[in-house]
Every structure is written in structure tokens, then in C-alpha cells.
Image (tube, rainbow, N blue to C red; front, side, top):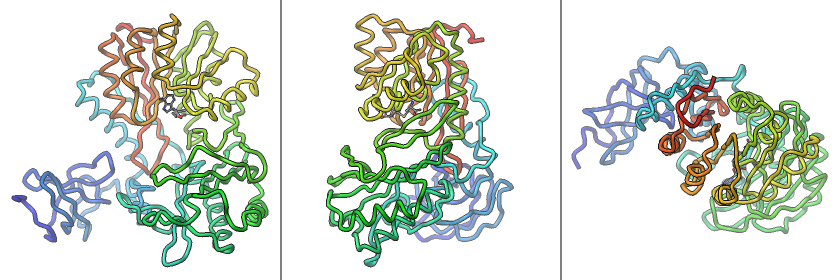
Length: 458
Ligand code: SAH
């Protein structure tokens, strides 16, 4: 194999770029080397770790010239584990990085004419997460909680997760210590053995209510009553203790069966003046401060007059539907997780709304049904998971042709792909507004407004 560098070679390079995963890139005769923790413009002494045909990996040995955008990292483990892979980049530069990533993807997809606005960031971009899913493993016979090293399943023990609500970090340590005290085993992935796989904790920012979920391989857990009592005694904000069964050999964190152990089976939070209940299996946005910004951006983009029929596809617990309902004639939500739809229906009545309905099902199938039934929608709001809109969903949009669409995306690669398809149906995307939901990480959330035809939105 002919490559311009060899494994174990040391050399000095200048970093040319930052990948979408936050790795520095240096090119040696056109051959890219990826270097963790290195920033564009920096001069770095590196050691080559791995050489493949198309690209290689190296690690930084000495930082010879630092970028003016470099800030002191909080903890190397936060980069190694991928919890905070951008912690060494100044926050203002992180916001520009995210805007630029979308621009690059639009350029590749020949969508350069869609303006990408400056990313809306947070005043304090730390300790923002309201949810944690922490792996539980045994290391040398001791039960540990922490996070995996990137591209591996090797656990790095951690107690301060930096981007999570500190009360969540505290709860994880409390549960860890109780599991240790009562000799409960952590999961052993290699042998598919042991009991507790993950600890999930959620904390509602506005109300302070907390939920702890023990994700286990069997229902039977020794000393479960004492452990639950211990959680309640140490953490007065915990109003819900649940157990989730995940008996499969899988990377999926939670199974579909949950059991109430103490308190009630949900917590409640407040957002944009509405109250929401959230169950263990329901999706809920992880950055409550920025969720308000994201939703307000989407509501403004929809520019409702009170007369419209709105579809909210991928509606979760109905947060967007409910926020839009007071500005619309009728809102129709669709969501695949039954527990989330049950939450959504209760949330609608909790907020005294009668013009919102939710359907359980795959958005791509329900949209086809609605289209076949001749439903007329004025605005289509979509908020799909990372894989973006399914081809069947897009096909139904091409038939139903709502005059306005608002696309909330957590993955700009699938967003760009879908915008190309929507353009072929006659939609014009007017702008994309990135909203930083995931500071210190490379995740990119955005809101794009589209109208049918090429008329301006204003
Ligand atoms: N709009 C909501 C949820 C967005 S997350 C909010 O802001 O909270 C995406 C949601 O899509 C999740 O609730 C997930 O369960 C749901 N989902 C995933 N695949 C789906 C599909 N094929 N059809 C309908 N919903 C789906």
C-alpha cells in the first residue's frame, strides 16, 4: 500500500479543517489524517496511529501553535468519550462551525441559494441536558458508571458529565452507590451477563421533578425495595422510579416494557407557558432552554393566523402541536411511540385544548392515509429522527402539497437530501435557522421554512 505517511511516523503538520465529527484534518500530499483535539490553523507535532487506503488517524504529541479559538479543555475524558468533543473550541466558534457545516452540505447538494443564518446559541452552554442515559459496567469487579470511549464499548468512569444538569450527575452517583452497597451486578456486554445495563435520569427544568429508570436484563433485582427507598431518601426531587426491561443483546438502550417502582409513572415540565407530562419511553427535547428558542422559531416560521389546519409529524408528547394549537384552527399530530401519544393526548386536555388530535402510527403510513382521504393541510410541520423523512412520507407530501412546510432537523445531511426532493415538488426553502441544542458537541439542529412556489414568505 502506497501512502505518503507510515504508521508510527512523527511529523509536524498544519491543521486545514475540522470534520463534522470535530476532528482536525491535516493533508499530506492530499492524504487526509484525522487528529482528535486539533483545530484549524494550528501547527501540531503528530504521531501517526493508523494508516488506511483513503485516510489515516494520528494523535497530537505537541501543540506548537495554538488557534486563537482554542479554550482550555475541561477534562480530556469528555473528548475521548464524545460527551463534549468540541469543548476545546470557543463557544462562538462552535456556533460558526455549525452554521458552516450546513452551508457545506447545501453546497454539495446544489442548494447554495438557501441562506443559513447565524446559529442561535446559549448564554451558558454547560450543564444544559435534562436527560442522561448512563451505561453501568463492571471494571475489575467494581460496578462503574461513566461513558464509552468513542468508537468502542470501553467504559471510562465519570461522575461530572459537564453538559448535564448537575442534579442528574448527583442522582447517577447515588444510584451507583446503592447498586454497589447491595451487590447488584452491572451488565457484561461481552458475556451478555449481569443485571443493570443503564441508569436513565430525567429532570424537568421548570418544575424540578425527577425520574430515575433502572434498565435491567431481568425483572428480578436483589434488594430492589431497599434500593428504591434509598433513591427516594437521598433525592427528594425524584417523584418517579421506574424499571425498564431490556433482555436483548442489542445496542438499543431501552426495551419497550416498563414497570412503576415508586411514585408515579411520569414527570411534568413547563415550556412556553404549557404544562407537559413525560413518561419513561417518550421522547422529550434534551435542552429545555434552547427548546423554547427552537419552538418559538418554528412557531414564527409557521406564521399562523388562527384559520389553518396544521399537521405536526413526529409529534412526540405533543409539545409542538400544543404550542401551535392556540394559533390554528386544528392540529393533527402523528407519532410512532404509543406511550408518547398517550402523553400527548393527556397534555392536550391538561392544557384545555380541544382542537388537537393525535394518531399512533408511522408518519409515512398515516400521511399516505390522510392524503388518500383528501385531507387539506395548510401547514406541515416535521421533526423527524436523524434518518430524516422516509421516501413514502415525501411521496405523500408530493401529493398533499401543503402550501407551507416547517422542517425541524437534527441532521443536516438528511435535511439537505430531503430539501432536494422537496424542491422537485415545487417547494422553495427560504432560510435555515440553526439553533444550538447540543453545545460542546457536533450535533446540529435547525429550522427551515418552505413554501410551495417561489413567492417570498414575508
Ligand atoms: N416533535 C417532538 C418529537 C421530535 S423527536 C418534540 O419536539 O418533542 C422525533 C419523534 O419521532 C420521536 O418522538 C419518535 O418517537 C418519533 N418517530 C420516529 N420514527 C417515526 C415514524 N416513522 N413515524 C412517526 N413518528 C416517528
